[in-house]
Length: 146
Image 1 (cartoon, one colour):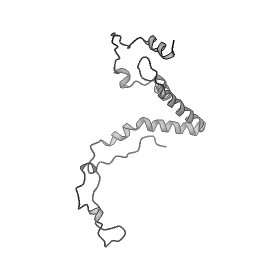
Image 2 (cartoon, one colour; image 1 turned 30 degrees about the vertical axis):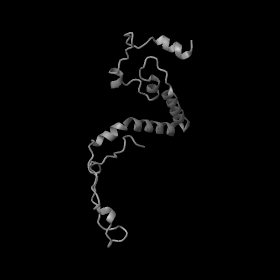
Image 3 (tube, one colour; image 1 turned 135 degrees about the vertical axis):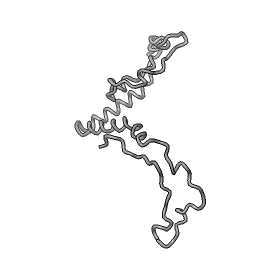
Image 4 (spheres, one colour; image 1 turned 90 degrees about the vertical axis):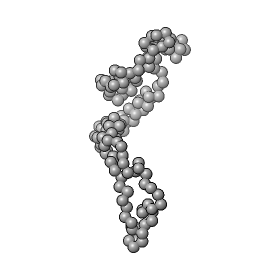
């Protein structure tokens, strides 16, 4: 069970290979000598910080850990139900206020946390100058067919 995402970061990739074959020590290995071309610069250096990979996959790892704990405590039904609920909520496309998906935040236990996007989100201004966009009631009525 991972609490922290694994460290899959390599700051440098070694291009030093043995000049002899692994199978027969006396034969030169022409594929590993790289005489025919240059080695791409991208395979030698990485311009990313070692923590960047872990930070990008932090929430995914925490969610997998939480589902694994639910499976150990409640059995396989609870994580399956949570994953299905999350997929249903993510597939819902109707959001009249154009805000973040509160239902998704509740399912991920993030309803009490405040992110950057919650405070400094893009304000939706309609053509009429209304900050919330067009009439919310009109959107709901058109979506439900009233």
